[in-house]
Image (cartoon, rainbow, N blue to C red; front, top):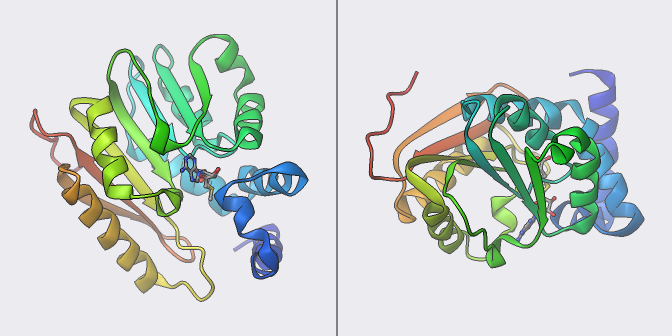
Length: 224
Ligand SMILES: C[S@@+](CC[C@H](N)C(=O)[O-])C[C@H]1O[C@@H](n2cnc3c(N)ncnc32)[C@H](O)[C@@H]1O
């Protein structure tokens, strides 16, 4: 672990104990800007988001939805892959949407990235279905996540995929915490009707888990 990551990690744990955790649930005001700044630069956060975007294996012409996009790190990675497609990032924090817009300015201007300030529980995105969806360290903050996942399944095309990513940030989190998080994500996806579930792990401290599932209607590709 590099020194910057360690210093940021200590600072974040102190901040969380002193009420800063709310800023990662719904960043607002000056403290929200700081939370977004950290999420956009902390090496584990950036690595985790880029890894997740790679796992989703987005093609050049695909339409991708990211829920709880924060400062737009994964949006940038997804837009780098969907070069002729569309990436829609959703977050209920206007501060995060502004940071994500700044981080993805050129792609927004080119019409390849759209950023929507709305809560996932009030998501309304008329138009063509999406090929893929991503949610990184956010689903635990949503009201009634299983209901949200059922709604998301309706926004995806048959055979479309979703990746739910978690790196537990609670004090004392270990590899066992990550395994438990993956099991919970898989059970929520199964409850919402997703099929072909598989889990991938990224060896950070604590490990990052990504559970991928498919909307039924077409055979899920074999795990690589
Ligand atoms: C811990 S941050 C993670 C941000 C980003 N996914 C990342 O990994 O850098 C959680 C994000 O989810 C957003 N969020 C939490 N609950 C939400 C909800 N109900 N609707 C939309 N966004 C939500 C927060 O505003 C915040 O930006």
